[in-house]
Length: 178
Image (cartoon, rainbow, N blue to C red; front, top):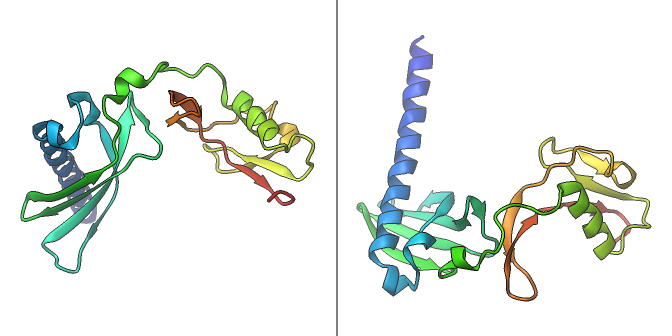
């Protein structure tokens, strides 16, 4: 019982510490919008990871911008915090990105996206191709993709025309390509 209580207590402390840092970073963004060239609704992000520097007073957080609950590809921020204050905030977040996203729901399924990817990669006639199911982490043979319950995460990406669109992250494996 003591071990369980201690485990729960430690987990609670880690969750609180992470929430505290996210709040601190969000407040910083909101208070420095003009300097950061952002608008208030650009302050949504995920903390991807963090690390303590050699000087233990400094902690670095690595962020990814989030729009409508989806990660925005190719965006990141590096935040350095020391003594409870943000010392550095470097980013390539997209300004006013919510206004630039045209759709908030996917118009195709992961199976359709996988088939499209296979065609675009000119792999539709290759026999040694597999697609990774995100949920199960198992490979699905190309021939079985249509009948599968393929799942893939959604994210927002900038397309060739400069529009921000919902996309599936499809992982394709092929031994005879590239």
